[in-house]
Amino acid sequence: MGVEVAVQGLTKSFGGQPVWSDITLTLPAGEISVLLGPSGTGKSVFLKTLVGLLRPDRGAILIEGKDLPRLSERELYEVRKLFGVLFQDGALFGSMNIYDNVAFPLREHTRMSESQIRAVVTEKLDMVGLVGAEKKLPGEISGGMRKRAGLARALVLDPQIILFDEPDSGLDPVRTAYLNQLIIDLNQRTGATFLIVTHDINTARTVPDNIGLIYHGHLAMFGPREMLLSSTEPVVRQFLNAQRIGPIGMAEEKDADELAAEAESGVELPPLPPIPLQLQPSDGLPRRAERPPGQWCREHAVTPPPGSFEGLRQVERPTIDLAEHLTDDPGRHGREVAR
Ligand SMILES: Nc1ncnc2c1ncn2[C@@H]1O[C@H](COP(=O)(O)OP(=O)(O)OP(=O)(O)O)[C@@H](O)[C@H]1O
Ligand SMILES: [Mg+2]
Image 1 (cartoon, rainbow, N blue to C red):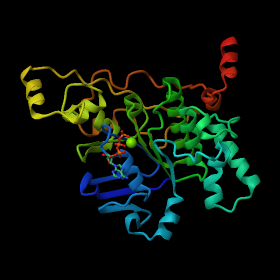
Image 2: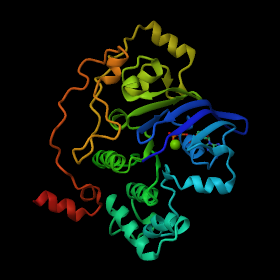
Image 3: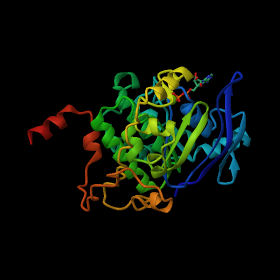
Image 4: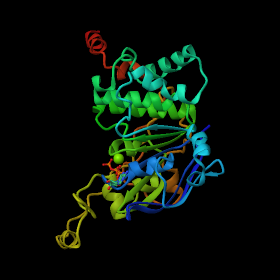
């Protein structure tokens, strides 16, 4: 079962330039949380700080009673085994083939024999649809395949906390849909605590239990999905609905003149779109942190946007073979079409 990650008053700067300050949030054990924010707001820095690759200026990161920034290198090494991380660029070793890249954490952190390692690596490569690409170097495969190799590597130690930095960037929409399903299924099967950084609004709206938004050096909001999807707070509303009108401009923040001009022109904000149902595990079992749709809104006397939670949950979901759909073997797709 996953573990809770409690972040308190976390602040990080580089050379006196603050990236973000005073971030306080709790990633609930076993739940999926998504972290959003305009480009350059420090989402990747936040993930790297969580795993102890970057040291915060101030604040606490509490995991199983330990405060990460206060641990010695040796203690940190132990705590890092709880984590699986998919870095934004995949962070594969360029001179190692895919198999060795995925096997690396097992060789580094366990005493498994090579045959045990082979079993685990093959299982994870199969899960992400990369069987057959073992001998390729990272430079010889597509960006999407590198992402999935990074994902396989993030999973080999059966981590309790999984951090994904834009798992869906560079993937086509169909693969993104399958990857999201894979994330839901993984969460349901492993019960690990997930944090996903994404720019994909559809992912943000349907995958997580909780959503957070970093904006202008601060955590604008963090909480249950329904809270943010029904929020009329200008930044949250603009970001989660991918709208042009609002405080966020091309260069992150609109200046006062632009905002005043928008206000003066009396542009009406488009209505909030309906809150969709959450993506469900493909085996038909409920999600780990399943809550009835609309429950948060009811409990907080918030009227969800019209049309929310529509579309009855499919009772029978077809079992899909994710590896089959994630594969890059064009022959397989060809055969599917031919069928
Ligand atoms: N090691 C570093 N040293 C100095 N500055 C850094 C370092 N890493 C990141 N930064 C700076 O911190 C800020 C936040 O960067 P970060 O990569 O976390 O943004 P991001 O939110 O992940 O953006 P994107 O959505 O484009 O991936 C940027 O201004 C970046 O230049
Ligand atoms: Mg980033």
